[in-house]
Amino acid sequence: MGSKAVLFDLDGTIVDSVPLILKCYGEGLSRHGINVDKDELLSLMGLPTWQVVAELARSKESLVINEIIKDIFSCFSNYWQNELKLYPDTVKVLSELKRRGFKLGVVTSSEQEHAEIMLNHFNISKYFDIVQGRVDNLRPKPNPDMIIHVLNKLSVANTDAFYVGDTLYDCAASVSAGVKFILVMRPWGTGVMSKCKPWKVLKELTDILNVIS
View 1 (cartoon, rainbow, N blue to C red):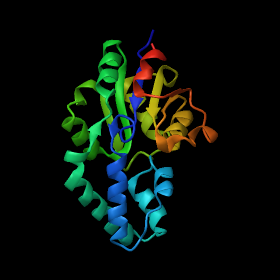
View 2: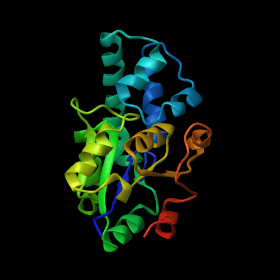
View 3: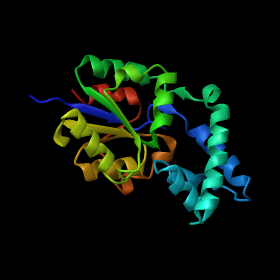
View 4: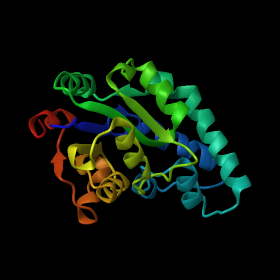
């Protein structure tokens, strides 16, 4: 039997970062006179920062988008060490899946450096065989590129892989990559199933231990 892999989204899946994301997008956009609709922002969760900002700012001008992103990242850098936390079951799930022999990876639309810093901060880098953040040569979710790239690096077939996430874009990328998508149900993910069909739906992350082996 070949190796199996479980890949995870980062924000909103294993790291409880959505409250700070909402805060910093709100702060960054408001500095430019843009009021944030919370539901619209939540519907864009899972996309790269530049794409979310372009949608919310209704702008295609790179100068405007870059200035807003600079303010968002400034907010994040000021608060993340004190305000971010892991979901309570994250370490239990990662350690048990590792014990069962799964290869583990992170596939996130966050920048590569941001992802690595966050995982090191929470001391969970040791569980992952690979961490893939957004890079220029791979299209971000909802495209399947990053998932396929990671599976190739791990030498795992897509039929032997699971992707765990919390957004529609996670689901779309997984389906396109031919991997089984496991949805962790968060408050902002209630509309996912009407647009994309997960393989399994979890009430809590720890439930994954009962559905894969």
